[in-house]
Image: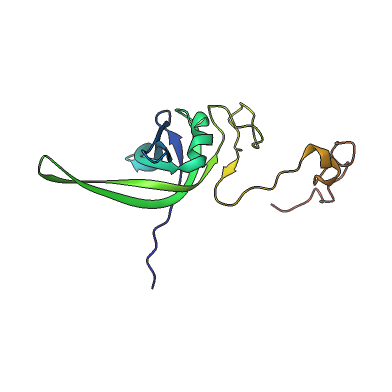
Length: 166
């Protein structure tokens, strides 16, 4: 059996993201998120937060840095990476999550241009930013957009019956 190192989290940023560059010019965007776990304590439900440090490398980090603000809800996929070093003769280590895919979700903060769900109502939405690019529909080809007719309005009927059992 092969080893597996995969993490998927949804949480809120605990601080604004920091963008720095390595000596080689590589962009490094660092931030942390809080993920709540609900557990019952007696008769009351309590949120128990866990905090995770996230690293986003390269152009993704550069372009998303401005949208990664405290309180913004995001979803990330990535892998765990452990850094080890010595400090004052003591062995130290830290586990971070290196993000491969990041999705901006509903919540506070502004959404990037072209993302879905750019409303400020806190509804779920957002753009997915990962290794697979999303298909965009350019304005010049409006007749090819799904769910719209040539004048840009939605069709009168979507073809689904109103009595769907779910």
